[in-house]
Length: 366
Ligand code: COI
View (cartoon, rainbow, N blue to C red):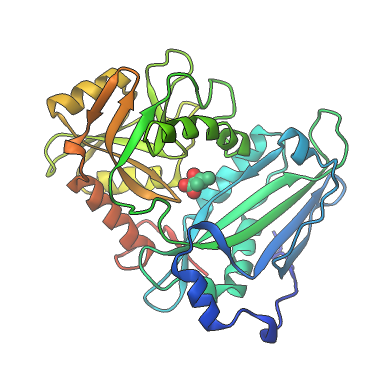
């Protein structure tokens, strides 16, 4: 494919946010509040295909109020991070996988698939324009948020014929405050995240919107996140909030990890995939196999399961210390962060920040 041509309009130097103010804003950024100064848009129409690739100053969108995406939820998104590297450059973690997943999500929602070359070019454009916003500190990063949205105004229930791809970025440090302190989680008995044949493996906003009420109920019970069980038997552990889960058995020097298999209802996490590779590379056994809620409890209580952790792009790796359900409460690993969790977290963060060798070609320089 030909290299895409972007129309570039950047914020004039005199109007850019001054360095001192930028550093101030970057200090406690939260998640999704400290946006950068530019954005990328690319349009798709049935007539023209992908066209009108632009880098612009961050600005409001103009959308027809009858846009299909707003009404019928024909929207997919992604999340990936850019990290400052020791050589002064910027590395983006596994944009090829994010691009592939965006295409798969798009296919599930009957949307056009953005070619990887355009996806990567969009990232290069935005990170290039906003590279002053890539934090220098380890543990902080620039979160890139691609979104594909149906913009055609025609509310017949059918796939739209016009779409907008959008890429924005924001500074982030820790998704959870006090990040490596273990989470308390609530096993949702009333709600399910995804059913077989549904949209659970697509990264589409409805999956996240549907998690908010259960998350509120978890909060009301003093928990940080919801554990999702499968829709059919309400027995098999699927995910945690918007993150994948790993269970660690055995001694810390030769652990065995279990993570639920991707069966169509689970989001195929990029961090999940990286951790499976890193764990196997450390000589750990990793099995993608179902684990029931009763097995979780009994293994945690008899001590054969030493640790549980959640992972995702936003949170990276987060230990789970306490589990609550209508059946009662139990702790994993005495409720504290375990060595396998912290070791894998460190190994991953070091690769992302270029502090240890990238043997798998995961870090894409921009
Ligand atoms: C992630 O980036 O890990 C996500 O799952 C996105 C979520 C925070 C909305």
